[in-house]
Length: 142
Image (cartoon, rainbow, N blue to C red; front, side, top):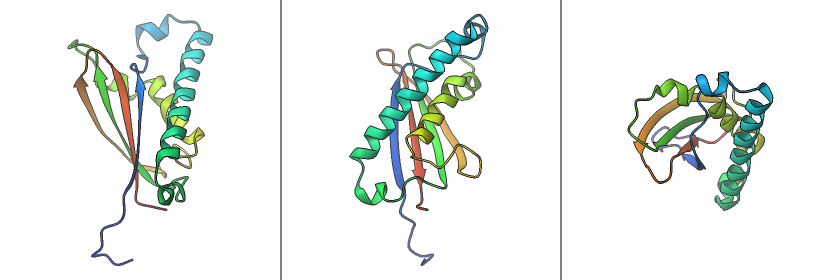
């Protein structure tokens, strides 16, 4: 490959409504089965929305899947100006389930550090009427 020609970057964006559940008090007080059901919903929603995004993508992007290397970033749309610990959003079990949904949809090979080479950037924005999380996955081709 010619180093003077920039590599083609492929990108898929998936947006889920709501914020991942916090690993703090709300999850501690829940029964394990209730927590598992929430994680299952996040994983399935992520899988379905990723499959829809893949179907809308150009064929040349689809031909590259699943990606063996990628970067993963996210924008969290917050419902209010309350103080929040960003680590509770990025490090939550719900966010982990969201990433697992990307694997289930065969967008990426797996969610190990040998595949997801760059985690970030993570950003936060106020959006009171429609809180959620938008994940951006980029690859330079396999």
